[in-house]
Length: 325
Ligand SMILES: NC(=O)c1ccc[n+]([C@@H]2O[C@H](COP(=O)([O-])OP(=O)(O)OC[C@H]3O[C@@H](n4cnc5c(N)ncnc54)[C@H](OP(=O)(O)O)[C@@H]3O)[C@@H](O)[C@H]2O)c1
Image (tube, rainbow, N blue to C red; front, top):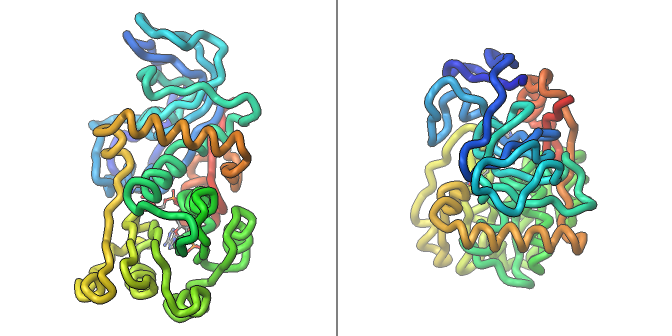
């Protein structure tokens, strides 16, 4: 089969699609014929050696996919060849086939496309965990989402709205703001051309945001923290802008604010039952039409470098996916 192989931590342009041996499902594993795999910002960090976890080399990146069951290993119950599934593979999904523990595989709703299925896992699972368990977001609260036209950002707009929050989407440029509005944001602001704190205060009638969802970092974070009101909760999701901000701690003291870290993968490993309940809630939201992954573009596996380049150039609206075949 063909797979993207990372042989050294280096710029992603050095990755190659190679012919490698087909994986064989071990006991408890499901072998999935990958139809589509979701691209996430951490994939780029991972292959360049800039992520918090460094897999042993060589490895195949790709944390999530959707496809068809090709075979099952010994002891696997509940899956059979031909089933349409999504799989939280964690690694190895940028390939034509991947073997995944059965506990990380779930059947796909009948009306879900493979591209949507591949886009449903990391961004949505991160976000529901962030908004439910970490932010304890309540209906009627003001939720400010940074990077609101991107992968986790559009998921935050949709899930926040489904949880009853009033969503303010912040992003750069008219296209991204339209994407966020289409995802359900009631208010938008362009953080490149507008004063973030002043606009949030204006939109919220002087109160400030209750919760900030920040996957961007850089200079935006401090302005967004300052835009929260009394008892505001600031979620640290990621640093797509590159710089990890250094925040003056008096901002937490003033207004009795909380800064809360979010690390979905590590939380899910410690709380498989909680994560399964979150995934079930996501499927229910999908069935009700409350969430729907937005696919920016489907790229051929061989064209992975274009997907990564578009992500770094801030061109991806919603989610990029790689498709095989
Ligand atoms: N904590 C967790 O468990 C967890 C899980 C998944 C992802 N993450 C993190 O969340 C972040 C976003 O991931 P994603 O997959 O949603 O990525 P994405 O789709 O590329 O979204 C990131 C957004 O950041 C903004 N941005 C600002 N400056 C940027 C720059 N220099 N380069 C690229 N984007 C920039 C862009 O929006 P504008 O152009 O509108 O500014 C972009 O839409 C990453 O840092 C990732 O590591 C964290």
